[in-house]
Length: 266
Ligand SMILES: Nc1ncnc2c1ncn2[C@@H]1O[C@H](COP(=O)(O)OP(=O)(O)OP(=O)(O)O)[C@@H](O)[C@H]1O
Ligand SMILES: [Mg+2]
Image (cartoon, rainbow, N blue to C red; front, top):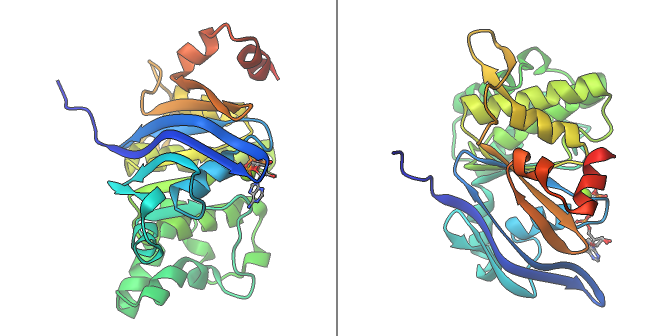
């Protein structure tokens, strides 16, 4: 039997409040290597806050956050910088720099770090754009791109430092259904071809379901329905400050909890 993959992200009894307002109460979960955890919850449930805790932009009031073997919740700011280098983030809005070309946007962190030569940066930028099938847009400005293309550039930018973990904050938010599905295809491809470990925040249940029921077929170069549920994907549902569900899709669908059933039907 294959050994279980190591845990790359772990929240252990995390509490967080802003003044009087509790946002997270006793939230625990783990994400293993090559797994995608889909984070579901209503607006204001604390999904973006979970991502901010994972990169140490916020610190919990109690509990522990471990990422890539480091205790983020206790790490000094200087060491957080090195850790964040190993994590790619796709922000809630694409958050591209309007005055920079696609190439410059994707190269941004690499230029800042000065670890690679210009030729190496060019090769890396092209590889990241190829991973989201957008190489031809390399010389364009963000304003010349559609919303879906901008989102793909922001995924390419998150990939630029070859991160061990990707954090996606509502990557399909504000997109039409066809473009949203196209973005999900790219994300599934990264999961199945590049074995990316990810936390994916989404409002769209169908995004999570697509991830759990489909896989990338490299021969057909397209998505196909999985025969069995894809176990590289699991779900965490936040409600009233707590993680009320953590597990596979099949268990989620079968869960009798009235809130979950209502949530699944809306
Ligand atoms: N820096 C902050 N200071 C004070 N309150 C904050 C801060 N960041 C988040 N909050 C509050 O924490 C709660 C959770 O916010 P969060 O951004 O995580 O929601 P979300 O689940 O991502 O929502 P959405 O789906 O709308 O993006 C909200 O009530 C928000 O107002
Ligand atoms: Mg959010």
